[in-house]
Image 1 (tube, rainbow, N blue to C red):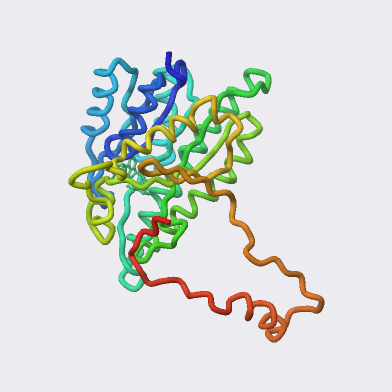
Image 2 (image 1 turned 90 degrees about the horizontal axis):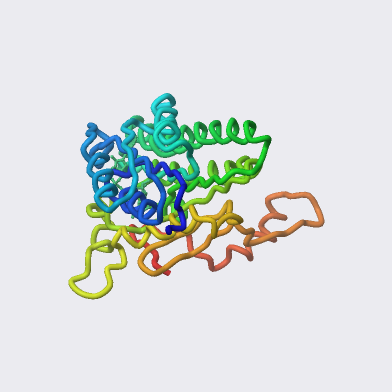
Amino acid sequence: MGILDGKVAVVTGAGQGLGRVEALELARNGASVVVNDLGVAADGSGSSEEPARAVVNEIEAAGGKAATAFGDVADWDAARRIVRTAVDTFGDLHILVNNAGFSRDGMIVKMSEDQFDSVLRVHVKGHFCMIKHTMDFWREKSKAEGGAPLYGRLISTASDAFLMGNLGQPNYAAAKGGITFLTLSAARECQRFGATANVVLPRARTRMTDSGPWAAIFQKPEEGFDQFAPEHVGPVVAWLASPHAAHVSGNLLQVWGKHVRVFERPQAALDHENEVEWSVDELQKVLGPFFEGKKPIEDSFALPMA
Ligand SMILES: NC(=O)c1ccc[n+]([C@@H]2O[C@H](COP(=O)([O-])OP(=O)(O)OC[C@H]3O[C@@H](n4cnc5c(N)ncnc54)[C@H](O)[C@@H]3O)[C@@H](O)[C@H]2O)c1
């Protein structure tokens, strides 16, 4: 018996990297899994059906149930077809793990319009299209069942880039911020079906992190615990997808190695109501002392571990 027995999941971008381990973990826990992947290169170019097929074979070889769904998550009709694959093949859809995406890093002064648009498209529009078609399905299902609460889990993938506004990733940081607040809004809306929506912020060694300024941090150690192995991220996705997390919604969970951190919505660091209306001088009286001694944001590629 698995905790996800009888549940149907879609995992996007599940042909490799984090999506692959998440699909394997959901299947290991009993879910039937639709493995979506467009099979693109690290910069989003090209396409191949091979990665998704390989993961379906891997799940089936381990005794699980899986089906492929090729297609671009940011294409409105393709996203609807991915959702339909779950319903047509396995009879339902309970869990959507939005994971597909790529990065095309660069400084703002060197960034092209296409470099910005393509990263926003795959992440923000990709998450939106998949959430939209999943929630359409849930709305119809809930209506057909007289409004009874259903089993629904939306799990999105953001990043440290959203928390930190990473140097050299303005497009990716903006996309991950967009995903985060899209998911918080979806969490409010899908409550009416009894469903939840949460965001995972993973840290793992995949082709996205095995080159560039962060590569040294993510390297496999010669000995000892491999804290950036992508396999450490799978269980948090399966936990959010499980009945244990029925009341967990609108949260951000950061995970790597043996760490898990929960971020709640941004908190005010200063909350002041002035006695008189604002002027520059009045603001300086309040904000001057507050910002006194605080450092401006650092110009660094470092991944803050603390
Ligand atoms: N690796 C990390 O440390 C890390 C950190 C934070 C967030 N993330 C996020 O995790 C997710 C997975 O990244 P990864 O590190 O496993 O990278 P990856 O490149 O190994 O995997 C991404 C997968 O998404 C697929 N994909 C890309 N565009 C697609 C599209 N339009 N439609 C369908 N599939 C598409 C690719 O073919 C690929 O298989 C991404 O959203 C990424 O931003 C990764």
